[in-house]
Length: 148
Image (cartoon, rainbow, N blue to C red; front, side, top):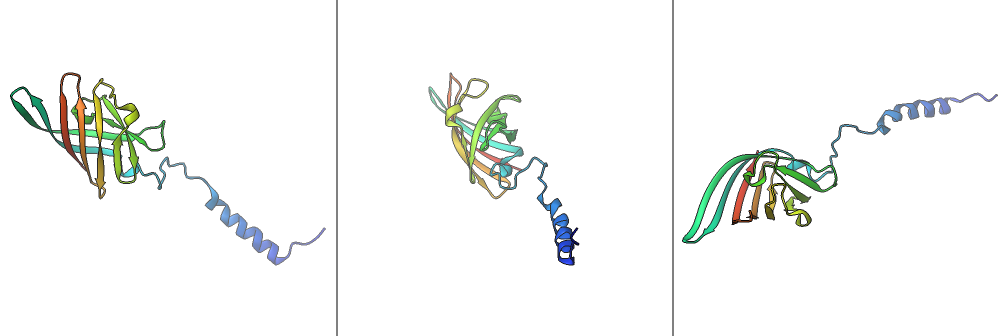
């Protein structure tokens, strides 16, 4: 039987030290996931204009939304209470870099409203939005600021 030399022992010791560095991260977050800056609770200031028979009606609203990852997609998020439609009413959006787009393949929100628009993340605490909402009875042009 051959003896293991000091170089062999050193190599074996070195490999044992490296083993923990090869373990996987089970924290559920991916540091490269572009959706991460968009996630969480946001305070919303929204202004919308609704065309009326005798002019436009401008309305300012203040409410909260929550953005979570869409488990069915690597680039989509789910926005709960989008457009102040109510808790449990969601819209789906796709993230690309610092931009977020209401998913054009799924513009129908869970309350049957049709939405179309996009937003841009500024820093880590502000999203500026511009979108339209078709409730079936009204067409609304909205702009919103999401802030943390």
